[in-house]
Image (cartoon, rainbow, N blue to C red; front, side, top):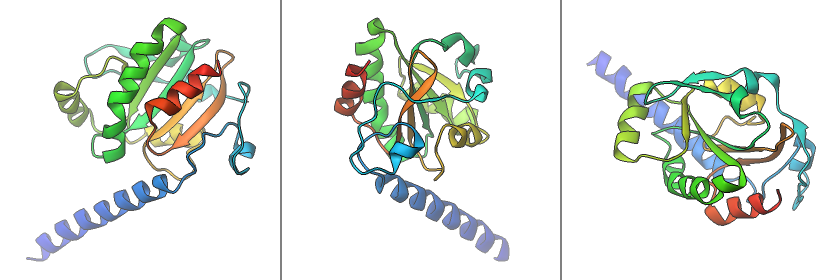
Length: 190
């Protein structure tokens, strides 16, 4: 009986933390933000220049669900839309079809969508078998939260999206679910 209490209590605490992160993500302003200084200015409109992405981004090498390796250095100099997500994150799953559509519609203009899964490999593989996407997925695991933090996710919520321009600068950040219209507006700036 005591063991069951611990198990249910732990599951309840995990669900509460996930709900809190989701709620915090929903409280973020709808406008994307560029450098952290601009994030605090209400209605700020970031331009196409931003702060340099940390070296840790370019040093990242992750296994991919279908085999092979995602090497971020190979994408340096490209327009990147990096999305941190997890299979258990409802807004993450809701935005994936629109991220996939964005990838298909903007690949010819040099855009690369990269999904970094902050989840266990088995769960990601099973999820993608049911709901495949055309963009690259890296298995960042729970350790991927460190990279998300380095890219500006100080709240630790999901989903978290970052745009990196061809100069390797972070020019957009978004905590919370994105939408195709928002992504298309971002792309029009580059």
